[in-house]
Length: 149
Ligand SMILES: [Zn+2]
Ligand SMILES: [Zn+2]
Image (cartoon, rainbow, N blue to C red; front, side, top):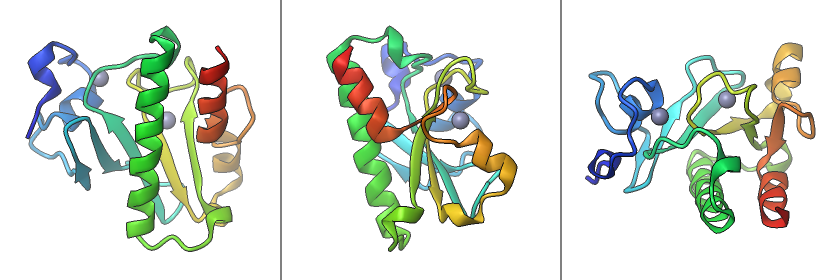
């Protein structure tokens, strides 16, 4: 198990750093590799609501080098999609994968929301996870945005 801590990219005060690097007693990792983990969202908006987190403390992808940011987001997307497939998602139109733009992210450590099925969302969740809004961006739109930068 590789810990991002090895290369000084962990912020000890950040809850997502603590969880993704197993620094808390109650980390429930549903998936883990050298760079990413997947956890349950603590306030699920639908039956299946997960977060993909990099182990590295990245507060804002806008501050990263273009190539690196695209690589990280693409990797989060692939791992997230495979995870949702393993959980049995069958209807692609019911899957939403996206990212909260700063300053609308409640925690300053980038994370990808995985939601399924979106028809279960309440009206408030539909607002929070609204694609194309200035607070939430769908993963493919984000990749496109990053590559045009
Ligand atoms: Zn962090
Ligand atoms: Zn979020």
